[in-house]
Length: 339
Ligand code: EPU
Image 1 (cartoon, helix red, strand yellow):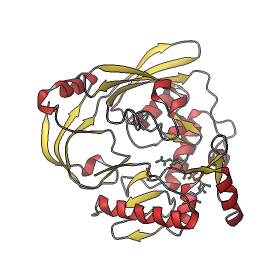
Image 2 (cartoon, protein in one colour):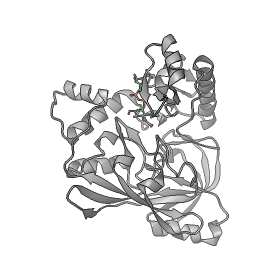
Image 3 (cartoon, helix red, strand yellow):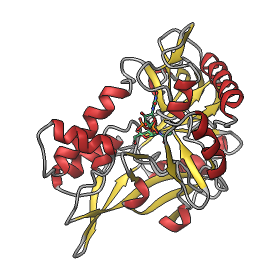
Image 4 (tube, protein in one colour):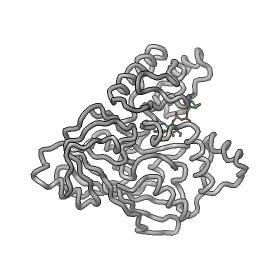
């Protein structure tokens, strides 16, 4: 294995923070992950697994062994009357996979176009956008047990997907390394355009009977209009989750703020738009030193360059406090904060 020492992680996180890794290596397959796990030299060492680095906030140097998963490959492993089953290696770039599916007419991931990150990271937080979530097309995944090195298969049920959640963020946190994901993609696909912005954007494009390609283009246009491109301004997408509150609290808030967006989230619960709340608390477009709140989507915190992850952390704490004081709502980070 090729080991690098004292490496800047700036190119490997989309916030672009310059934290140093004591050790860094890259792996191309499940077997290479297993070799490291079983190597006595690394058994006592903590690991930091990096996919695209698009959902992390680095707040300091990393004394761990950083493993970048760069395995590639998309393989059609099975086909039945209704579905194609594709096994995709964890290091594939998520949006390259979406493009591949659209080009081959494999249906179900086009609404998830342009989400940054890798395929292996996608199930960790059940990525979602524009009315779709990865769990709808998920068949199973294979992951390496960090203690035994064994390659274990997880069904959708075993992954316990929730809103930006899976078992790999909760009870099995830091226990497995995802090596590949197998998706179940539709042969007779009906594009899903219920999400308001998609319908409107397609109408503006003059498209009334959209195919997957049109939906992908609409989603890309919407994302580009709202979300900053990490290649230009460092960011990690939504910094917080949309909070779920009780229907009673929502009714009370609606009296004071009639336009507060809310979506049903199970019995007696409502999911409210954190971006709207943060904007209402006065933070949209706010800048403090080298970091700030995006001026077109207040849920996204940004790094303008030459800053430190601790600045984003401090800003996020201020936002959380102000939202708590104004709305009585607790915001929880969606990104993984690494100290
Ligand atoms: N809104 C505002 N002000 C803002 C931002 C949003 O008023 O600054 C309002 C919007 O007008 C809308 C509502 O809040 O009424 C929801 O906004 P939007 O549709 O942009 O979606 P979101 O809830 O802010 C979520 C995901 C995004 C995903 C979009 C689209 C989370 C935490 N975020 O954002 O995912 O792209 O829906 O489906 O669930 C990500 O996870 O990194 C991410 C970008």
